[in-house]
Image 1 (spheres, one colour):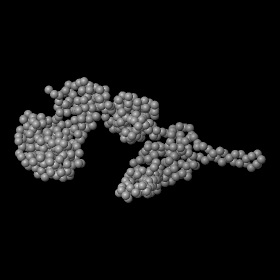
Image 2: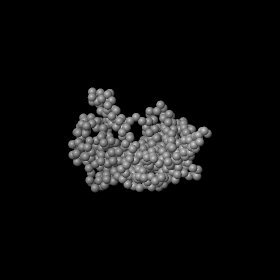
Image 3: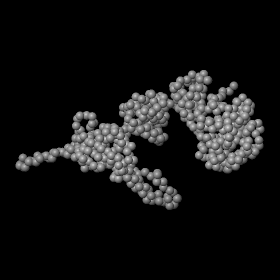
Image 4: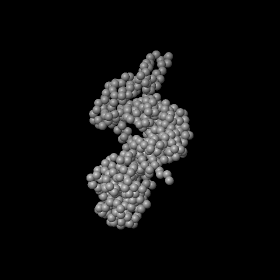
Length: 535
């Protein structure tokens, strides 16, 4: 006897066997029980979530010899023939291969005839969005007023391509992607029934690779059983899927936390040597950073979060968000790199290059010192004192005392002060949205607009005060009140500057003689969103 793949062998035959989709099953069961059956049903959702399976169970429920029921017997000839795909009154149509209007008209010519064996003649049209516009027009009238013995069951992965005239004639049910936990539990139940050994890690890998599709999960399970010669092991499944060992990803993150460039590249080379490619490694790194962000926010992080808890304590939330964004952009730009290895290495090194470092900020007038140390801040370079007068000159020249850090910052605008502060992340964002109302020596009286009040926080204000202390060389005092801000803040000045540069860039494009020729002679159009000022 030929082998029956798991996706077909374990296809649900009654509603109770379906995994997930309770929001679809419940109204169908109630409609069958109450006899309130619509003539057209539309099932939408991604691949492998149960659209055609639900349609076939519904066809069985309509034609079971025991009567219209939500629990077909599965034993009568009608139920068996539907399960075996040979029930004469269940007409399955693949719209992807029958898109022409002639095919649709030929199909509809037989609608008027009564069912041969069953109670209803059921038309199951899969991937209905592939029909042509003329085919939809031919279908509309029949779809709106079909004979009482006809039911239409439509399935599609792309409902946006359906005409609204079709959508308005159907009851629409949107099937959800299945969760990893649902797929993993189903795979475990099938393996137990098939008496195949497995471990939890291999099932977790397969359920994640299924990406919300039960059919994909079962197909991968078939492949994994063949790869492992009748059993499942984490190493075999990982090799089959091309996944990266999480210990290698943990070493990458540890090297990032330690700012260890050689260790970072060594871990990357190890991942590449074990069969991973640049895209896969960055994808795994993105997943790990997501888990760390959840851990730092004290949210459930799933099964992978346990191994990352120690690294979560070594990285700041700002670093995690920065690394995630760089990895995301690097993954997008990977095809443009000379090769995947170079693209991966440059993405990882970019994380170290752009990571905020306390000791390496833009030059400031006073080199900041840590507020926790008792040593005074190092003064800025002091201009040479006035030379003493020659011996022949009797007048006495008094050396001018060097200006203090506080003196040098006294006349600075708040924007200039912010540009010299040794802060980053949310603290810099807070400083950029503040307006200096008044300054009394080392006391800064600041105002923040209510729309930015969410940036306030005790820790951020403390960090800002410490940065001001380091800048002015004396203990700074800080007070912030919330009120409408009419004056410019550093953030507003930056935004205005960017808008001016954008306007200048757009004007340069519009005034370009080549562009004018294209617009005038060829009817070309300039998309302002594609214009960017030079960096």
